[in-house]
Image (cartoon, rainbow, N blue to C red; front, side, top):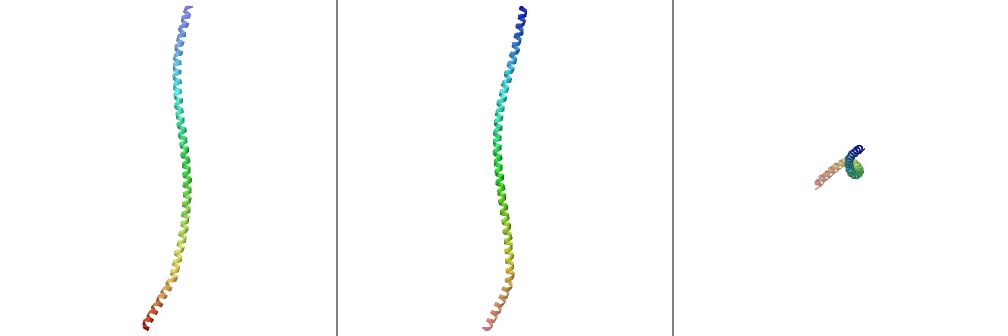
Length: 125
């Protein structure tokens, strides 16, 4: 009996030692898991912050794109108006050229008549 008790006592001691080692390993693993969870929480907070910044930048980009589209529309309207004005100016240039073509012969005729009148006046004097 005493040998059995000693044997059991030894086995119990061995088991307690093994259990102690396992508890120590479990405690280390628990600490590592806790540290990993803390790091994961920090990473999650950083990801949330970056996501918020990305959303803000996307909103700003959309606003800039809308503004650029409005500016492009305005620029196109100005180009169209400028083209219309160019057509009007061309028509005015053509009208002036046509009037000049009408007036030049009349001016030449008037100049000839003025020259004749001046010569006639000189003869009379």
